[in-house]
Length: 327
Image 1 (cartoon, rainbow, N blue to C red):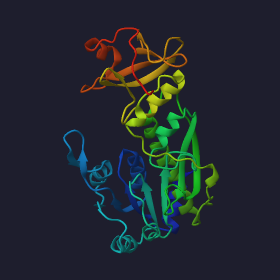
Image 2 (image 1 turned 90 degrees about the horizontal axis):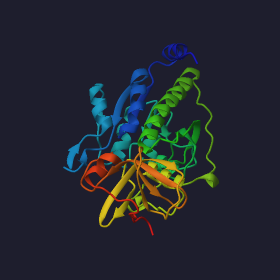
Image 3 (image 1 turned 180 degrees about the horizontal axis):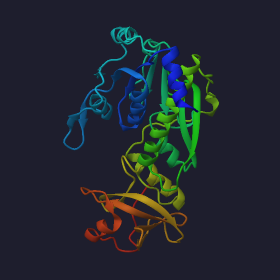
Image 4 (image 1 turned 30 degrees about the vertical axis):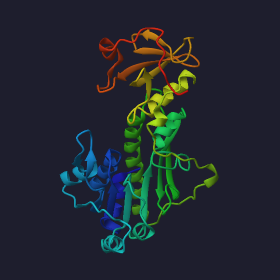
């Protein structure tokens, strides 16, 4: 695709494309950068400051920080389901709303405020994994293929018509953070292509309704779900660790101590599930229902995430110790 030709056609036939951008976390930053470089961002809408971290200090969202660095106008409304907010969006006379991990469900009056409605980037191949946590669920189930979807939004969560999908292979060493980061960049690229093509042609690309019969849900992960079940095959335990890598962290118990485990790989071994096999060059080996996982990183209660060897230097775990997981 010749993007210079598309850009020239856009400027010649239609003038600048006016976009209102809704987004909050790091996942939205690549899309914000793509749009800022090629379109007119008339407004950025993001979540208000909220207490974060151990100190519970109120901080702006990553999108707000980046948007202000770019000199963009930013608002942080506490209510988006009001007539006043819908009217504010309509008065901007935007061509598109683009919504990327904003964090709230927008009403029809807002979604319809732009001339061409609202587009969204979703990090899964919809209708699989509708909901707020598609990437962890992709990893949890050990899926080898995922992708990004650009859809036309409606009032329901992730049920809008599909405009374009691009698939990608999940690498065996990817965790939730690394895969989400990669899909954010890919989604931004595909969104840019969609907008360029629609703008150049002056007509919308086809919208394809989702097949609800094929849908699966991806709710937020909970701390209770993160408890490791050592009775499962090592491949499934490794998928569990990768899915919960960022937050809240997959864990098991040694006595009353809740220990978190990260960066797994699978090795051949036979021993009762949950049994510590010892420290290897790759990390701590723990037996599973079939084979074993080696966890390259660990986190002791109150400590930082570190290489397993460093953690065990201060908190040794003898061989044949049994770590308590899900029962």
